[in-house]
Amino acid sequence: MGNKVKQFSLKNYLHDKVTELIVFAVLLVVFAIFCRAFGLKIEAIIMIIALILMAIIGLGLYEYFRKKQFYEQLQSNLIKLDQAYLITEMLEQPNFLEGEILYDVCYELDKSMLEKISDLEQSSRDFQEYIELWLHEIKSPLVALNLLAEKNASPEFGRELGRVNDLAEQVLYFVRAESSAKDYLLGSCELSEIVKAVLLDCRTQIQLQQVEIITGNLTGTIHSDAKWLKFMVGQVLVNALKYGATKISFELEHEAKDSILKIRDNGIGIAPEDLPRVFDKTFTGQNGHGKTGARSTGMGLYLVKTLTDKLGHKVEIDSKTGNDSFTEVKFYFGEHDYYKNVC
Image 1: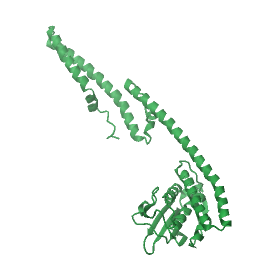
Image 2: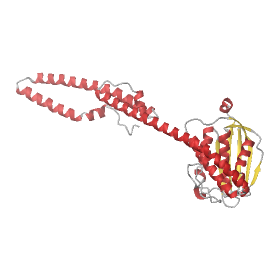
Image 3: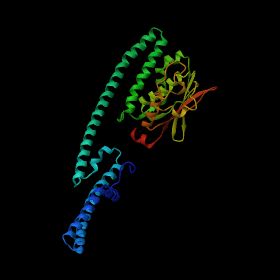
Image 4: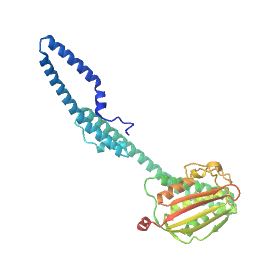
C-alpha cells in the first residue's frame, strides 16, 4: 500500500503548503517595508513578525497533527482490511472540514458498493437456484431416454445420452463448487458402494468400448460426502473412457493415517508438459478431443480438485504417454479429528 497511497508526513504536508508559505513570506516582507516606511523601529517590526510567525506556526502544527491522526488511522485500517470498501466502519468521525467531506463521500461509496454487492449476490443465488432446479428437472427425461435406448438396443444412443448426463452433472457441481454455502454432508461412506454406483452409471459406455474393469480391495469406510465423492470418481472414470482406456482398475490402500483410492487406466496418458495444469479450469492440453472424438471441456478434473479441497481431501495425478501409457489418479482420505468430530 505504501507505494500506492501517499503518506501524510510533515514533509508532504509542507510541500502541499509551499504556495501558501511563499505568499505568506512575501506578505511579511511587504509588511516590514511598510512598517519601516511609517517610521516603526526595526526592533518593533522584528517583534511583530516573530509574534505573527509563532501564531502561524502554532496554528499550522495544530492543523497538521489533527489531520495526521485521521489520515494515519485511515491508512492503517486500510492495510488491515481484506475488503477495503468497508474502511468507514473502522474510522472515527474527523473534526475538520476536509476530513468530514472525505468521510461522508467514502460512506456513500461504501453504501452504494454494499447495495450493489447485495444485488449481485441475490442475482447469483437466484441463478443458482434456477440452474439446480432445471438440472433436476432435466434428469427425468434423460432417464426416460436411457430406458428407451436400452429397449431399442441402441448403445451408441445411450453413450451420447451418457455424455449429456455427464455435462449436466458438471454444470450442477460447478454451481455448487462456486457457491460460498456448504452444500455437502460429511458422513461415513463405503467406498465399494461408491465405485459400484459409478460403474453402474457408466455401464453403457463401458460395454460399448469393451473396457475391462478391475476392482481390487475396496473394503473400507471413509469420511466424505457420498454424493460429491461419487461425482468425483465418476469424472475420473469418464476421462479414462474418453481417452481410450481398455482396462481400468480401482483399489483402496492404507498408508499411515490415510486411505488412498487409486484409479488407474491404460489410456493414451497425459503429456509431461500438461501434467502441472490438468487441474486448471478449462485446460484441455494436447489431448483435447480424446480417442472417442468427444471434445473435452477441461472442467472435469478442475471440479475434482475444487471439490476435494472443499472436503479437506487431497488428489494427485500421475501419467505416462507412449508405450505402456497410463494415468493414475489418487484420492487421499485422511483420518483427521475434524471428520471424527463432525461425522
